[in-house]
Amino acid sequence: MIDTRTAPYAALLLRLALGVLFIAHAGLKIFVFTPSGTASYFGSLGLPGWLAYVTIVWELAGAAALILGIWPRLAAIALVPILLGTIVTVHGPAGFFFTNANGGWEFPAFWIVGLLAAALIGDGAYSLRPTPFRLTAR
Image (cartoon, rainbow, N blue to C red):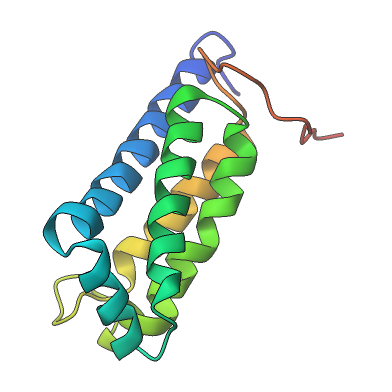
C-alpha cells in the first residue's frame, strides 16, 4: 500500500538527491577536469569532443529540472542516456563493482534505477510544473 500523505515527499527527496548528483558531476567536469579537458577525455574514448559540452549542459539542465520540479518525470527519463553512455564507454569494461579500477557499472546502473523510479513515482511535492503526461495503473 502506498502512503499518499508521504509519497509526494519521497518523490521530492529522490528528485533532490538525483539533481544534486548531476550538479556534482557537471561541476567535476567544469571545475576539476575543465570543459576542454573533459572534451579531450571524450576524444580519447573515441567520442566527439563536442559531446562533452553537450553532456555538461544536459546534466545541468536535467539537474535544475529535477530540483525545481519542472517536468521532473521527463527530465529523469532524458538523463538516462548519459548514464547508459558512461556504462558503455567507461564503466562497463571495468566490471560490476564501482571500486574496480576505472569504476565499474554498479553506481551508474543504480543511478538509472533511481531516475526510472523518479519517473514512475510522479512529480512529488513542491514541483513547479507537473509533467505533461501521467502514468496510471488500471
